[in-house]
Image (cartoon, rainbow, N blue to C red; front, side, top):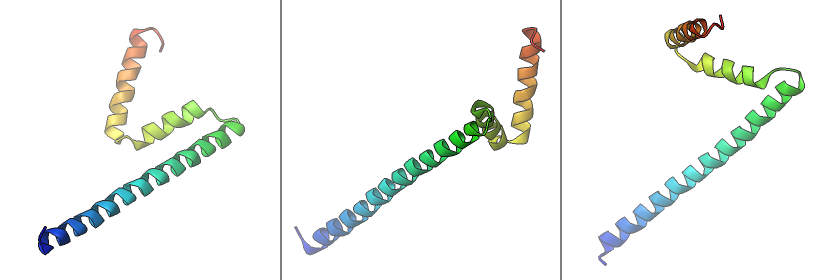
Length: 85
């Protein structure tokens, strides 16, 4: 193997190692965040809050307001059709 190819391979291997290690750290961070979220929901439940409702609120707050209004309007329409409104 020529020196240029060997150097390129070494650089590529180092870069690949950095990428893989960075991804591994992100997975660890995501796992830690998952545990933090679990703890917060447990705390909310311990204080008497309904965690399903909180999860629904979090999901709705992430939505674009127009998208949320459209979803709520469709849900209201379906509930009315089912005699639930």
